[in-house]
Length: 307
Ligand code: NCD
Image (cartoon, rainbow, N blue to C red):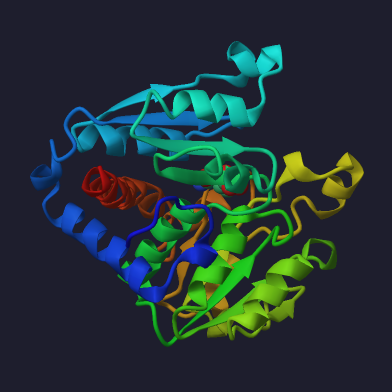
């Protein structure tokens, strides 16, 4: 993969994806061999929205490669409070780091920020837009559990505001995967995402319930209703709790069904599912380390080669 920035899953070809997944598998096979590969490198973490997994796994991945991280900290304690623009903040911090990770509540923020920086920039979530590094770890987990061709993947929950959904659905069009989308009417995939899926040859099959389609699925990707993106709390309340799965719901599923969730979950998956062989969401979260080590390794290698 020779790309300056990772902004959207739509920029990734099958070859790009496989290159990252294969490198992550090599990291997994012998983590010690990757320690110190990027000694002295500095990764800048700019999170304008809450994060646990993404921030901590980028932090850990950079350190496992021998690098260090600098963190903008909470928005409340940064110069953003003084009215600094995103463009100015990014222009300044690019001078402090060899690569940057940005999460921001506005869709398109990473695309805009990339105009202002020369070091590699990774979009770690832009509003309801995209979250491509999450997608790479989702794909890695799918490949490990079900293979990436000749499978049916159900994507359920908040398909309107869920950026992990928008990224994953786009990336899956590179593979022989049948996608089934399950959501309440009000949280269907946005028109633009549906259009892009059609354009890349993907068929968009939509359902309002899981029951009919569940027995066909090899993977079920459950998502949180993105409460923070609802303009109206009443609208959130109407759909909250509607798409919850428990152990009994899964009785009609294939024995080999893999259940994924980008986390955090609120109550979409009952804790009883955690103890079944279907549950792979904690493994999925742990895969953030090899995937982000592989991704940083590739972006930093390209960066060093360019210098
Ligand atoms: C997701 C996100 O931030 O989009 N979290 C994550 O990075 N694992 C999903 C979510 O917040 O629901």
